[in-house]
Image (cartoon, one colour):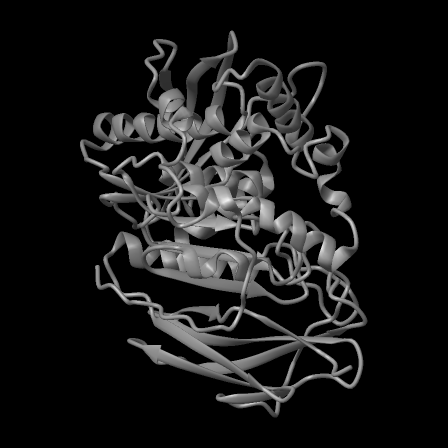
Length: 442
């Protein structure tokens, strides 16, 4: 695979933490200790093969582990579009719940766009647990249990990561048995807390992780991000209320709490996560401040790309001028598929770098491309009275051309970023720059 160095000089300065300084000690070992711990409950079996005009869908039952005396069972679906052959690298999407119609449509659509088998792993995490708790409430509960017990196996992200690792084990064995073919590596992806899981799976150092595509988990460098939320929203986002209610936010000023956040923050493992990474965010995601990426982008090692989806929240489905959302997140799916295709077939991703030079209330955004030339370029802008852009409407500046000069607003705040569009053998996809927020002169 060709490699492109993405030099970034977007002028953003974030605060530093004493425990997170460049000379900080090596990351905690609890994650790797848990994931690599022997567990004889691992098993899998092929339960169904469904052949259709669009392709074949295999269904697998998986038991990934026993955690806190609870067996974690999962469903895996492997989507093989018609005419596609197994490849040495496979996309592994991890998500919660069980297979349903929409996940089937999404899985087959990605597989068709990629042109290779794609696997969906369900039931990450095992839930509900502990009195009916699910999702963030369940994660928060396990964090509280860690603080009470100091037992490093408690944080729920660890068994979630082990689910993905055991999913890779099962898929390799399945491919060998069903196709007589060796799958050697994976593009690991997932959204929200499953994006969090994707980051941490790469942090284990498992050599089978060829690339990651974390989706809508714009919260690396977590202690700094908590400050970002207060700056943008005036208080923590209501979307993380499960953590606030559990008194995990603000982060308690105790050694145990600091250790917990080091254990589960992908930023702490940044020197280990050197694989190519495709970060996909919604420009109206209510979970995160708009410019959250700027607190960790420069710290990431290796090749990296970003996509912002305008007028889209946590589900990445874009809303039109009337507020009507699309059925599936087209922009995100196309970019994820293009990235995955490049990783699977060893094609070069377009190289993209940018500089935002601000002087006297004017930001000059210059973008440099390497490799494939874009078929189109755009500049997206949004306005807000404060740094809270969650309900802002994004619009394309039809008159703007790169390099673009963007003026600070007369009042309030203006956010903007550039987007480049490409054509990969008929698959149209987009990449973006980081975004910048300009404040009116006082």
